[in-house]
Length: 213
Ligand SMILES: [Zn+2]
Image: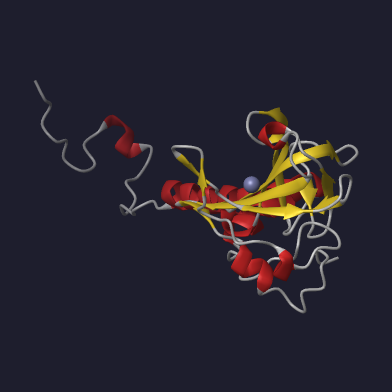
């Protein structure tokens, strides 16, 4: 049961508090809006500040790598080898149901192997066909595979950021290359699978035989 609207001035308080002209009160909405703007600005400022701190260097680098275009040429990952001397064996049959998903770069055991790109080290492990192997996620999120290494560069570990030319390991014959002439198996994988890196190696600069430093 609802009470009838009291006529203006008929309430008991009317005598004490004269009715004022009704006015819409925007204060709560204004406060909420200003509060939201304040917190959003503070959040953005703190986020911006944090993103540029040293401890965010790795996420920043990963974001930059992901956004960077895939390289159009690649320096030779093995010291002292000219790309023109590397055989084009990408796609060659390997066994009954496998194809060669990279190129083999022959060099004396112990020759330094260097990253062809800047990148994030996402794998340093031993086992399987590749033996001692390093995986680097490079520009455009391409994965670079360095296999059959005799050993890893000192202190190299997953999560490291590398620059082009940084040492990853040395040439060897581990994995299924055991007993063959020492070589680096180098493969590059894009989101749709492996592609032949040899044209990129051959297209690199003056083909000086060394990874860019
Ligand atoms: Zn190979």
